[in-house]
Image (cartoon, rainbow, N blue to C red):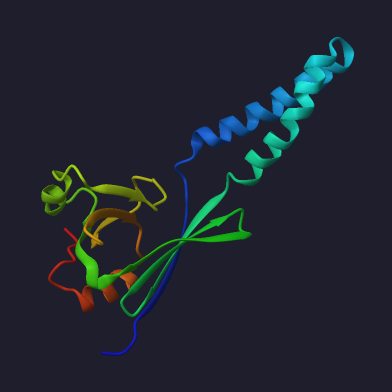
Length: 167
């Protein structure tokens, strides 16, 4: 078989509370600095201390996941603020036990395992087609939630047709 290649970038939409946190921190910081400058120095200092916390929070809110499938290697990278890349995980498709939509009954046998570790690299949007990939690596079982493209799904299905389901 020839090498297969597929790449997908998914925006993380799960972080709604993070947007509220960002707005709240900005308002709180500005209010503490303004009120503290006029009336009380301790509140002003607290506002100044909150400035780097607010900047760090704002900088790390936007997140994307990049899936890269090359032959039998499935790599996941986290991209923060479209600038910093961090390799999250790398899986071998030889360790793939099952791949099916999140709501599929084919995953029920794996979900009953108390040692199953779930890692979510999907957008979190229920309108998107989210798949669970069950990997057995180093004696541990992991469920990895992803949003593969049709090309990626076809490539995985072509190599491992007996364990990839789309029901």
